[in-house]
Length: 102
Image (cartoon, rainbow, N blue to C red; front, side):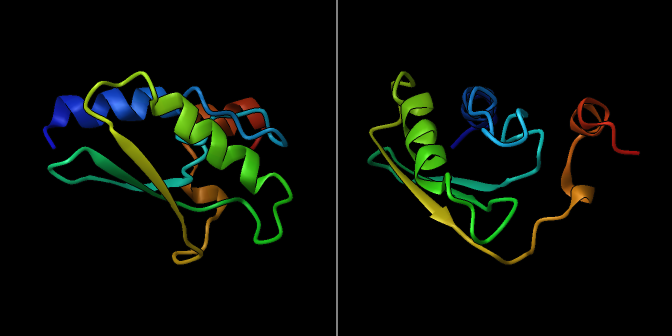
C-alpha cells in the first residue's frame, strides 16, 4: 500500500468519532496499524479507550462505513487489540486541547 492510499484511509478514519469523547479515533491515537493485501482486504488494527467499551460495535461499524467509499478498499476487518494499552499520551495535540488535557 502506498503512502497516499494510507493517508487517504487515515483521513477517512478521522470521520469516525468516539461517541463518549467526541474526538475522532485517529487523533485519540486508537488506530495502531493499517494493512491491505493485494485483493483489497484492509485490516485496521486499533484499540479502544477502555476494555469494557459498550460502544465497540458502533465504532467498528463506523470504521467499515468510513472506508466504504475508497475504491481500493474491497473488504474491511477491524482487529481490536489491547496491547499496547491505550493512554492519553497517544492522543494528538489537537485531541488533548479539545479535551482540556495538558
